[in-house]
Length: 236
Image (cartoon, rainbow, N blue to C red; front, side, top):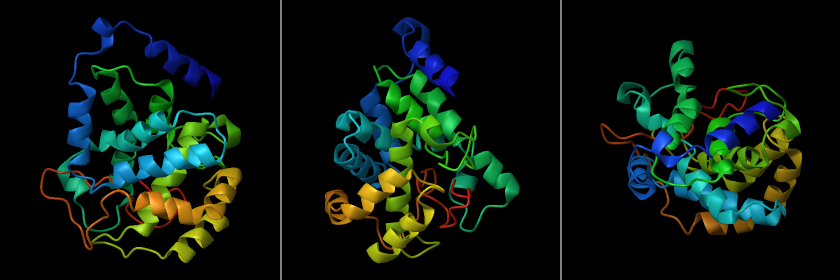
């Protein structure tokens, strides 16, 4: 979708007086981090390393920032939805799937210069390599590389993490899941690198505070993690 990428590049060039009326980036990052139990930082670390290992040429610092902000749109969703303890019904899932566009909108109002790849990753990290993702159903290499990297890092951390509604999977189970979804949910080249260097990914993930066993967000805070382990386009 070249026209989308062109539009994003044009929007981020708009004068600060036109689009940046909101809080500074540091303040927004702190707000996002309050309810995600370290998920955003872990995704950022994983994404930065994946970008380096694959020779992507993308800025590691920009990928780390994209990881920290990828679920920022969930701040604008109701707590009743974010704190829902079970599997979402169709209507709940429809609302939850607005978080990429909500996150993109939130970033446009920050008092900060944010790399274009961060906007792309926030909006498109739920696209799938086979075209069955959202919000646009983009496919394969048409999905910006940053979004493909963040999407993979997001699921790796979600699968490894224990939550009140699920147990964490073992590294062996996660690698098997990634292999199964290579070419489906994920870019097969990224999966190949992730599996080859999985121990390195685990090591860098451990540099961030790990999720609390059975963690549940406090009222008013957003759990920035996947709701279930079904990768057939049901991850919010």
